[in-house]
Image (cartoon, rainbow, N blue to C red; front, side, top):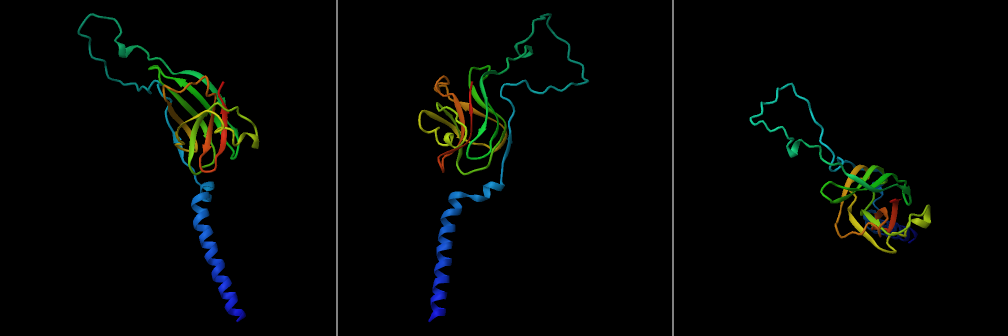
Length: 191
């Protein structure tokens, strides 16, 4: 009989371990500690790279010497606010800036971002004050916030469109927010 009990206990232990693994692995996704995605988007509204050519430009037909609208230098994006990321739940570095583009639209620009990959990460603008350490991990969903969408990659340079109805005077911080565990991976105060 003792060997039957041991066998039953072993089968029960394996069954419980399988159920725990089936629930815990998709929830926590521990492999994301070793994965990553690099995104390198161009600065929006920046002048494109020009290439020189040895070709001779065609002659002009009219005597009009005024520059055409395409020949005038376009405006560059204007930096409204910026800040440097601090780490919360996971080590996070890089900078965040809100830029106004020549057409009047606004984007959040993350530069040199480096954080952990994680499940269900979003980029949030928030009215929360950025606090150091554990006391700042959970504050970003306490007040007003606006998700700008899923984090495109945990490393690199990326842009997030800010809808016109977002009040940037009220939302003065940005967080890399994990919806799965309601925690900030890192945040920056926008000043």
